[in-house]
Length: 107
Ligand code: FES
Image 1: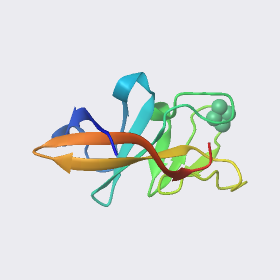
Image 2 (image 1 turned 90 degrees about the vertical axis):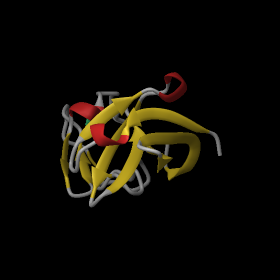
Image 3 (image 1 turned 60 degrees about the vertical axis):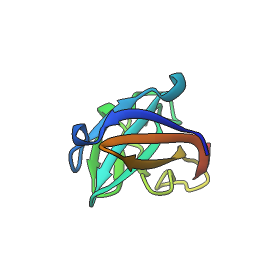
Image 4 (image 1 turned 45 degrees about the horizontal axis):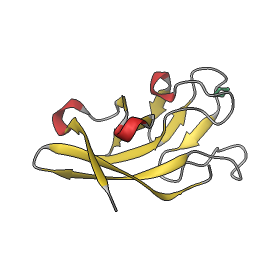
């Protein structure tokens, strides 16, 4: 996997959404129960920016038409055949890294 440095680890608090652009790709980061998740930053419905959405547990709700996604799998909760690309994350020496190599999801 190729890893791209995207953010100071302290900049992503628990329950927070943050947009980052590893290699120019729109990605949303979220920290839930201490774990960092990364999914595609544009909603699969009409492309609204998901970093403006709301996060409750692992459920990310799009700000435009309330489509809900599971951050762990990227799946659209009302139609699991649809979903967001999921990316790998890791932390090292106080920095967060994203891998654009897919780890799942249903783009
Ligand atoms: S653009 Fe996200 S639900 Fe419509």
